Length: 96
Image 1: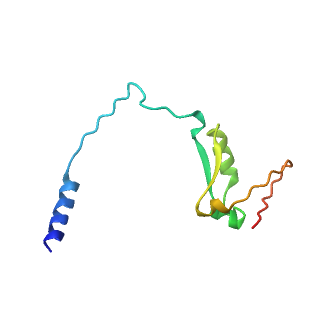
Image 2: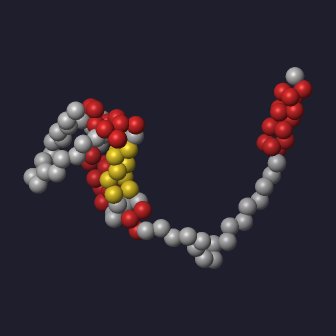
Image 3: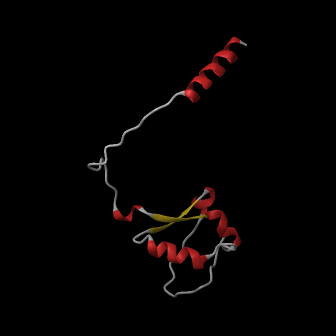
């Protein structure tokens, strides 16, 4: 019981503390590549042929953020197989 009271006391003390943070913006500490920005699609969307995604919104967003990379992420990303196709198509084809 005493541990519980001490934990509650420390928690309340931490919430009541005020901090001032000053950031020196005169020069950058680190820089990143211009290609750092990316657009990520969750692989869970691929199971439904990306239904529900508004590509008329995503395409202009990706162009505005360019240069950028299209990244597929999520739990199933390790199971994706990409096949190079030299023809352009508006349809998605999934294998698996």
